[in-house]
Length: 337
Figure 1: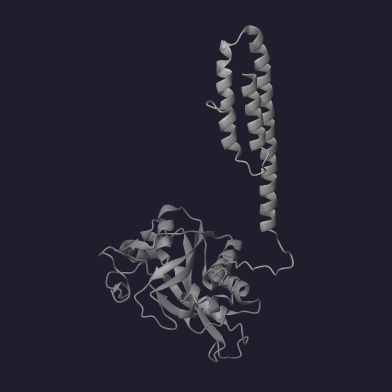
Figure 2: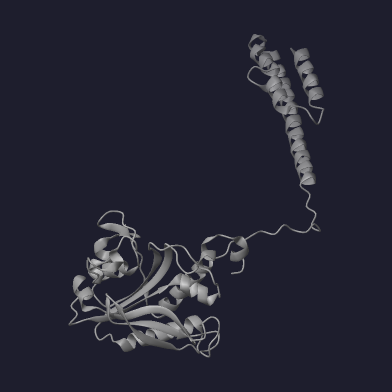
């Protein structure tokens, strides 16, 4: 049995002398449950007691030598693999780097974020609402009767007789007034839909931002002061505003609001078409019928509302002459912002 152990030791150490030896295969061959050394150890029961001790010590010595050689070779092979990988992945710091393209905000998103920052700074909250809306919130609650032209299917996308794609973000205001006790001070930005043909200034999908303030003692003066502050922060401190009488079913009195041209300062230029003023939004005092429809007593509370098109602000701010450019996803155009 001694000769057998010496033979196993010699064969194992010779097999493990190569740096490329298959270590796991050799470990199983010599030290595994069915390995050559294990087979010898199983036959030790047939030996005399005095031989058993001697052979046992020799077998343990052989096992230790084989295990140590396997461990040593394993570390050598790991180091060799690491060196090869480092050599293969060697970095030449003199080679010019590859630029990483980063995303950026769309011009409409830039304008919307700026608008939101302005009104958040004035104490407004941002409120969202459904784009698929009930006829009641889109029209009836806003004092728009059944026979109003805006209800024509040529102007509004109807899904059913009572469900439609909202044509303005005003339904959000109605929902908030219905569930909230004044004071109310909100803006509601979002997508809206109207059955318009696509051209340089129209799209069946566009974006609005509307504002609403309801409280005791709110006047037209509060509306004017708010819009003046908005105009100055959006277009510059020299910007002025003017109100022109208008009609909206949900406000009374109502006005179209112009800003002095922020390019020429009001002297007349291509942007303002020589007029010195640019129409920017619609506004007015919330109609008493709208307050009643939403459960608010018009004898106790008053308020104002305003609405503007985000696309229109973007066209003016960035001097874009065709609204379709905003939707074409042309990288050459978008990279300018």
